[in-house]
Image 1: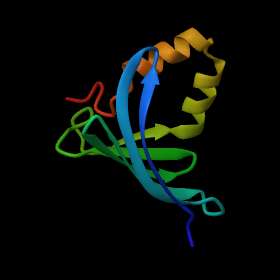
Image 2 (image 1 turned 30 degrees about the horizontal axis):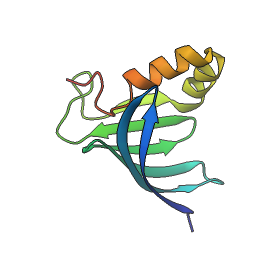
Image 3 (image 1 turned 45 degrees about the vertical axis):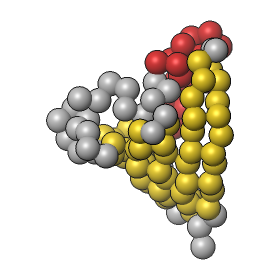
Amino acid sequence: MKPTVRIARDCDIGGESFSLSSSGAFDEQGRRGDMSETVDGKTVTVIMALPYGYAQATGKQIKGKPWAGFNVEGYAQALERLPCAAAVALLRRARTPLHGLT
C-alpha cells in the first residue's frame, strides 16, 4: 500500500500569501507516486516515476503538449545550490503551478 498525504494550508513566501492544497500517494520502494496540487484555485496533476516527474495542468498546454516531463532530482539539487534569496525569488515566481504555461 502506498502512503497517502493530504495538505491544506495558507502560505507566505517573501510576503506574498497564497492557499495550497495537495493530495496524493507515494510508494517509496517503487519510487512512484501521484499528486494533485491546487494553488490559488489552479490545479496541476503530477505523476512521479523517480528520478522523473510529469505534470499536467487542467485545460492548459505545456510547450504545446498536455504533459511536461522534468528531472525531479536534478531540480532539487539545483535548488539546494542557490543562495536563500535566489531560492525565495524562484519560488515566488513559480508559486502558481500554471506559471509559464500557454
